[in-house]
Length: 119
Image: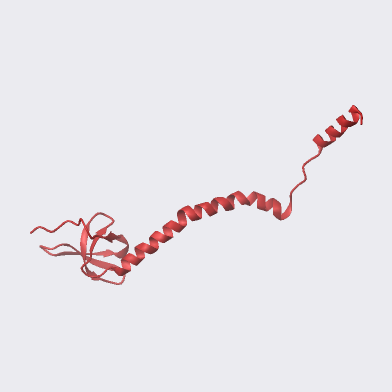
């Protein structure tokens, strides 16, 4: 092979276009990063949040009369009555003050550290 032949072969290789990917593989290569990002987002954000919501709903279903609870706004109270979608909370004993709140505002059951009523 001569030098001219090698140069012309090199020019041919440089000027050739890459084969076009079409059809399913082209679409898959384009969508693959988005699918991966969605999968990571689902496992890092959505699944833990679903687990937390399920745990909160289970806690709400187990509440009964006499349980000390803390509401999202920071008010402590004792469950006086359990209704279908609400709770009646006693927030003061003397005089007896009872408020009605939705079940969703209860943040959790208080077992320790609840403020004691002083007469």
